[in-house]
Image 1 (cartoon, rainbow, N blue to C red):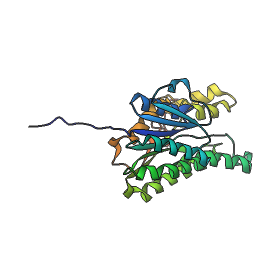
Image 2 (cartoon, rainbow, N blue to C red):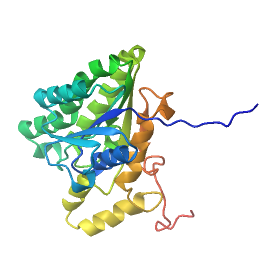
Image 3 (cartoon, one colour):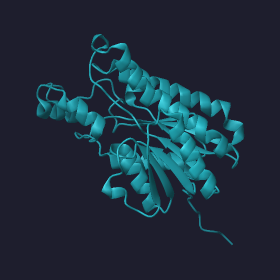
Image 4 (cartoon, helix red, strand yellow):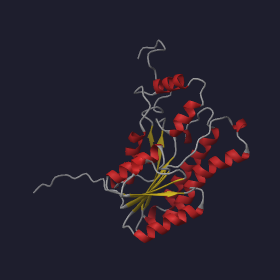
Length: 265
């Protein structure tokens, strides 16, 4: 007797998400709790009202501080979930060429974006391998691969996150770890908005950037968050050390033509 095909997209029992106070992190945490997943968020800022849910706990702390992750590990030990997942979406972005960054500013960006990710991995990997493995989703950026003007330090930090994650995937694959990279393009969220507000004409900046997108619009972070949940789910078990570029097709072509150039499109 034939059986009905079943598509599984089961998620871990508990997922730790960094950077949940805004943007992509908020959206990932919200989707997780709406999917009945126990979620621990961590951010220097307080949790937004949209995450007020009995399944969500918020830890206020610096992701680049080892004591923050020690506290989260203790929370996990007390709850003892069967399966664990991790999403590292905490990030900072300052606009400027390398000439506008002193050493302290460089170190701050690398501390949050790279060191914060590495410390999360170091804290969570033993807990995950003790449970037979689990999924890690490290949020990088299309800037981890493609250069973007005035974002040299940010791009370098995200390139480090990308390569850290791919190497961790290889180092721990036989312990059941799947570590993949989620690289968003422009989203209507904090980091893009900060870049936009730094422009001399923010409205013109937004219109020009939206027009570069094949669909003619900047992505909503909720769209990118769904790609993150796919990487957390068991629907993505064939992926390890992979990168999903969630940019609405921006980097698919070297020159997307809108017709305004006089070209035949």
